[in-house]
Amino acid sequence: MPTYDYRCGENDRVVEVHHGMSHRVETWGELCDLAGIEPGHTDTFTPVTRLANGGNVVRNSVLKNNQPVGCNPDTCCGGSGCALDS
Image (cartoon, rainbow, N blue to C red):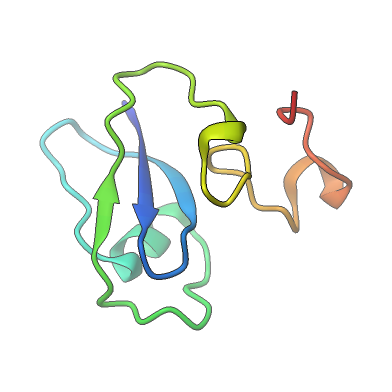
């Protein structure tokens, strides 16, 4: 199943999820459900935008939130920083 990256404009988080090619994630709540994460303080009806990375690697240095794509800073690499930060 393909991997897609979505950005929430409200909280500037980028989340990586897997879904079929014809499926489009429209809201933060739907994205959180699909990714298995809590929505936090962001309204679940907030729209999200799919990033057009064309399957290429997106470096964390180009992201506004400066986190590796799909990385949860609380759990990534045991919560001690991420090996993808290079």
